[in-house]
Amino acid sequence: MVADVAADHDDIDDDFCPVRNILDRLGSKWTTLVVSKLDGRPYRYGELRRAIPDISQRMLTQTLRELQQDGLITRTVLPTAPPTVEYELTSTGRSLLLPLGQLITWALANQDDIRAARSQFGATPGAVATR
Image 1 (spheres, rainbow, N blue to C red):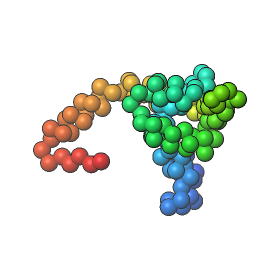
Image 2: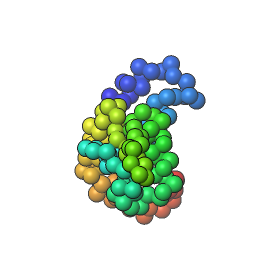
Image 3: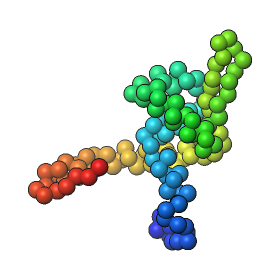
Image 4: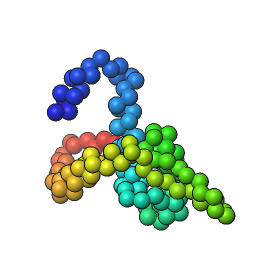
């Protein structure tokens, strides 16, 4: 199925592939966590920071900017004192929830097999782990 889609787009220059660019962004663990967290309601910055405790302030700010730049979230400044900022998924961002949910379901269903394969690979003499 993926090969069929890729074959339909053989004319895309590998050096400038918009799909690869988008998938690189969506593949970030922070992107998936932030998008997942925004499912259902808007969040203020501090709420997101508390909801995703292992993300640094710098990475949260960068991720939110990138998601806004890609049109997946909106940033709304509310007229309060001090001003409050809320982040919410756009319709494009909400359209990502279904495939993202399917990927998360797949990861949960296959995590034991993947851990076992990694463990076996690491125990294999001559195996080279790359990162």
